[in-house]
Length: 311
Image (cartoon, rainbow, N blue to C red; front, side, top):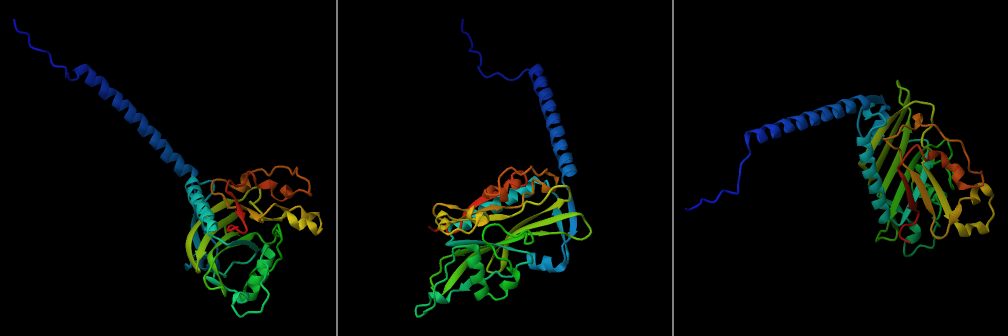
């Protein structure tokens, strides 16, 4: 008797097919409900509003006419992702920098050159080379080569910006082949505005290169009982400067063992600082921490930037 071998490739039975189709329907229905919930919550939790920042601010910030901008209210996690990319771009710029200088201001900035004249670098120059080792020294140098900047950066700065100067410009300088000039790789700006007609603060963070806007993100903070994430930066000087006694208010920031550096805080779209309770101060006035210990819960975008990254 000759037996026919049974095929090892079997199809699904009707019952198995019925079970598989039923399970697929259940999974598809569950995923649809989850997606609908996410969509509904994103619309419920995300608010887009039109805020009036004024025609001069809109033109100066974005080179656009009009006076209103459409912006997300915090918290917004999509904007937070953009802010993270912006932070990474700032880090990349500083990697190629020869000098980084943070300056506080109250007015809008209009100083965004591609080069700064450096006459002391000319081959035949007899001028003394300026020592640009503090933000204040750079502020004085900037006023000498860009005279209109003195009206914008009108407040002396050593370590902590004055509370009346909440906005910040960051000049990222880089090497230049012509010794008579300093190249400006980028200018970053952080501005806080109180728009008309709505209670809150509009925060705008931007990057310019050769005067042209290249990147930015913004967010609106609805008013509350908290405070903004200020100061935006704190400057630390070399520890060797302790050889000169200038008082606790300044000497407490002389902690850098080699190169001076900054702590920098960018506005966080994922957190509304007005809705965060400011913790009670615990650091003594003799500690630099007392200048920024309130910022821990107000933003997650903190950077450490060396003043001279090339060293």
